[in-house]
Length: 392
Image 1 (spheres, rainbow, N blue to C red):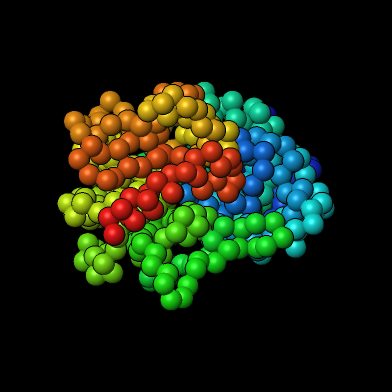
Image 2 (cartoon, rainbow, N blue to C red):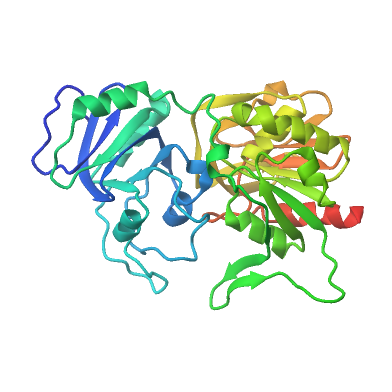
């Protein structure tokens, strides 16, 4: 799959993935032209490529899709998990075909072009996935040039010099810079997006969502569960949050190293814990809640990314099939007294959920809002909003 020795371009190649060790994986470029450097990971989901590309948690990453047919249902304005894509590019097996779906409003190739994201097809994604599984997620550069001309030496240097995600705070790059109210509910076929109830007699508990890179569908599920949602920037202070007089606080997902983002976020979370108000965290929010409670985080070998990850709920032994996207995790062996593990991965035993014993604060590593993925864990939103209502 890779030619690590030569800098010459195969005659049919218009795209290339250059890894930090100098290996060159040649293919056919599509989408935008140019190059981008980041961490190369793989995603095993069979659907939802547009949701994955627009998930802010993928900032700084190049996604290898293990499912071969990516782009075949086109793109649309409803399947966006943020305003713009955050993944740097995508690597696929088969060429993107014309869309075949009644919801499509744009060809995936054109969607990538408009949004400045690079695609690379014709790649042996099985071989690349095996490489990532064995050696860990490598740094790399994805490049597309319609005329097939590449400065391979420059691309190799760029890949080798990129520092990697460990120690990198990316939440600042994807978080909102201004607070706003969110009232959109989940999408239903033939109905579109729902709306939160308004008017006289409607008294919904107020959630402040701290945005470290929040997916829209998380906010929609909070609305559907009965909450009134106000979103604030990831760098919001304790005073910024509390002046809204919230009934509870949600800690959003996001990209990068939780220890780096935690330098400014964890002190705020610790102050919020002291208020006794309910707190719910997902993904990066889960990791930083763990740090705030006294645990440590670790960089994973390859991470978990896909829509088919089995998670065991320790309370009753039930297994949930979940959507995941993370390269860091809370070290289960570092949980202090008063913090209990609630969920674990059945793939590798890593921690997937925690709960504090002395206050209403809990979190999960996976994505109960799906998009893409199964909805086995959507009950967590009702659990959280139920805590808010009990507090009111």
